[in-house]
Image (cartoon, rainbow, N blue to C red):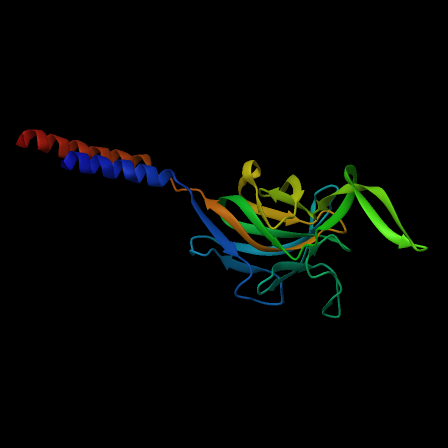
Length: 243
């Protein structure tokens, strides 16, 4: 019985060492400062911290530029200011491509897997497409007579802002995607100690409300596993002698 108990403990420790923990870092509460040169945030469970700074970047070459002001607003999240005059921000207070292409840099100090980004303060637009999806009949009175006619009905689509995703140290461009609420990166999830989230075009703008990461497990040293196995072996021998 003791042998089984120890073996089960060894198995449980091995499994727990192989499972990554998922945690979320919320940038909406509590509010820190209005404009700052950088800020440190902790995850909800206190297991991870991240240093956040704001920068400009070239949306064509994807080269990271100078450091700019970082803003954080309660209930809204992170924004940037890349243009100021006499201590007054003349730029959009969101991460945007107006005047400069803005980028938020997240430095974790350890490898994590970025799995989800929650955006806010973005403005999707609904536009008409060229696809005819049906017809409709409309009638109206004109000169005392009811005149009716049919017309084509066109489909619509929603156009979202875009964001550029970077990863690595130094930051390297990965891909561009739509800004749409909480974005699950899925197969695009990357593992690195540093990430960048930027606005690639002049009409792209958003704030970053939170990020969700998986913390890579710390593997149990081989010597530790060998020690546990040895303890299990001794227990087995003792059990056999008593039998």
